[in-house]
Amino acid sequence: MISQKQQMVNLWGVYNQQEQHNKYWILLYFYLLKTCKYYLSLGNYKSREIKLTAHEEQKVYQKFRNELIADSIKIQKYIEEHLKDTYIKTWESTLKNIESNTPLPSLKEIYEDINKVWVGDKNFKDRQAHNTKIIENKLHDLLLDESLDIEEKFLQAQKIIGDYRYMIERLVRTETIHTMGQASIKCMIKNNIGYVQWITCMDERTCIICGARDMRVYPINVIPQYPDHPNCRCLLLPYKLF
Image (cartoon, rainbow, N blue to C red; front, side, top):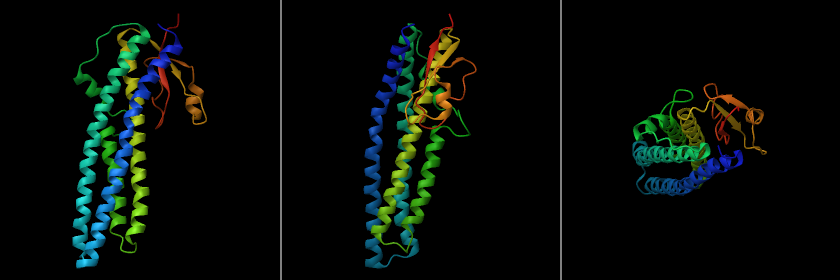
């Protein structure tokens, strides 16, 4: 196997490359703000001009809700493709680390791996849908609140949509590191590597649990929960006892 330092460089290269794709969420944030402002303005305008009934206000909101849900479905697909690419790149990087040429799993196997529930009772698609529902409910209550004017609603909507963007970023980052772990472990098992070394990214953001696991060696079949928390940045490297 190549040096530990080079192994870390190879795997972090995959993570950093995939992080570049997350600029997508910045565009999403501004798109949702623009869309929200449009429907707020539309509802405000119609309310003043033709005195919208509560039912008509619901219809204006429903149009916004439909766009939010349609975008959420697109996001699920985007994340799935992102994780597929992450899996493939991690497998290739792990092969470099252990100096092997084991064939990549089939696309069917890869999609099955990334769509599995690995913590709690939801996979990434379920979590994205759940997060969207939370935001949808918050925006529903805000947009139909008669006690607030359009400027106040928009300011509050900015925070809610900002929270939504953070939820998506956290989900993608966590699923990315989990996918990297799954691909690495499967590749190592295929190559008869029985141990992994837990490498923690040590800085001011490092949690106590991950800090305590840094450099520890685990049998590949008894690795602690990985990742152990959202936004984890730890790596699992192949390890030979002798």
